[in-house]
Length: 266
Ligand SMILES: NC(=O)C1=CN([C@@H]2O[C@H](COP(=O)(O)OP(=O)(O)OC[C@H]3O[C@@H](n4cnc5c(N)ncnc54)[C@H](OP(=O)(O)O)[C@@H]3O)[C@@H](O)[C@H]2O)C=CC1
Ligand SMILES: O=C([O-])CC(=O)C(=O)O
Image (tube, rainbow, N blue to C red; front, side, top):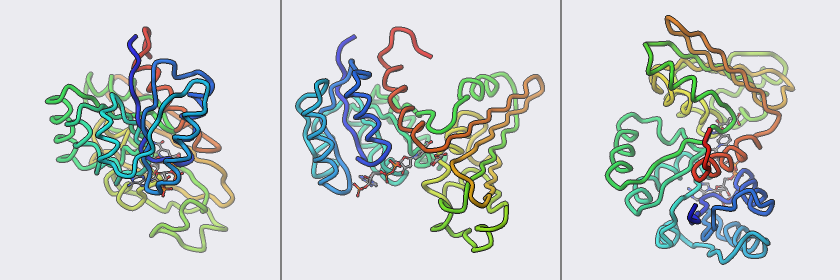
C-alpha cells in the first residue's frame, strides 16, 4: 500500500490519541504532513511531536485552513467541532482531500449533506464517518437497505457536560431528569459537542429528522451511555455502549484510518 499523507484539523484531547497511535507504530501507512488548530501554538506542539516521533517526519504547523489545504493531503482527520467540519468539508473535498470526521453533527442538515455527497463524488474523494463513542453502523445500514425501520437513540449523562447548555437546571445535580426529547437535528443544534453520535447513527439509518433522541441526566453519573435501537419487520437490534471517557472516539479515528489502507477491512 502506497503511503498516504494525512493532516489533522483540531489539535485537542481526542486528536492527541492519533499522535499516540502514530508513536506506537499503529499508523504505518500514513505520513502526517500538517496540523491546524484555532490556537496556532497547539498546532505547533502537535507538529513538533510528530517531527520528533520515531514514526513521524516532516510536519508543518499551519496558520490557516487554507495553508493546510495547500499541502494537498490525501486525508484530513477532522477532530475539532461541527462548525469546523462545515467550514472545511467542501473546500477540502474539492481540493482532493478525503475526510475522516468525528464531528458528524456538521452533516445534520439534509441539503448540506447532499451537497457534501455530490462534491465528494465529483472530486473522487470520500467522507469517512468515524464510529466515535458508538458502533453498529453496519447493522443500521444493512437493515435500512432491507426494509423500513424506526430508530431511537437514548443517551444517559451526568449533569457536568450539560452545565453550559440551554437545558441546564440546578435540579439535575440531585435528581434524575429527562432533559431532552426531539430528533437528531434538534439534538445537535442544542448540544453541538454532545450528540454527534446521534447524527452519525441517524445518517447510517433513517436520517437525522427521523431518529428520536432522548437525553437523561443522572446525578454523579460518570461517562456516557448510549442505546441505539432499530426495529423493522424482520430485525430488532439494540446497541448499548457505555464509555467512561471519550477516548474511544479518538481511537475510532485511528481505527478508521487503518481500515482505509488495510488489506482486510471491517
Ligand atoms: N463522534 C463522537 O463520538 C464524538 C465526537 N466528538 C467531536 O470531536 C471534537 C473534538 O473533541 P475533543 O478533542 O474532546 O475537543 P477539544 O476541545 O479537546 O479539541 C478540539 C480542538 O479543535 C480546535 N478547534 C475547535 N474549533 C476549531 C475550528 N473551527 N478550526 C480549527 N480548530 C478548531 C480547538 O481549538 P484550540 O486550538 O483553540 O484549542 C481544540 O484544540 C468535538 O468538538 C466533537 O465535535 C467528541 C466526542 C465524541
Ligand atoms: O462522547 C460521547 O459519548 C458522545 C459525544 O460527545 C458526541 O457525540 O459528540
